[in-house]
Length: 167
Image (tube, rainbow, N blue to C red; front, side):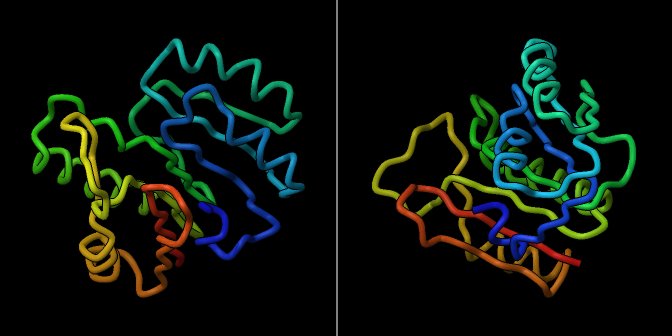
């Protein structure tokens, strides 16, 4: 879904996987025959990055793994999958501001586009430790703050949705 909201470009160039965890995005992209020049995985968890080393090494794509909260240079596309879902005991308003500021920062690093997914507010039950983003609110924000080239996909049978913003 993250690729579809960006128009499924066949050449991804440099990919930034923000909150990469153990690096599972890269093997998926290579299995789908996407052309990738470089993969950059960013995470704040050293144990997740340790796991990612073997995952990305097996993909055969030039890769870097960074233990940081923001990348060190521009890339073509930024992918954020599930990274913002767990807010734990952080106040919802504070977490929302953090999410928006992070997306704004990542947008500054993206030469072509950003794709991110969220749990949806359109659910019949919410966990107090998870973050649910309202598609209407975030769409309006993205249109005002980032770009008029925005795609929202709320059509798949999960309680989540994807947002793509292109330059």
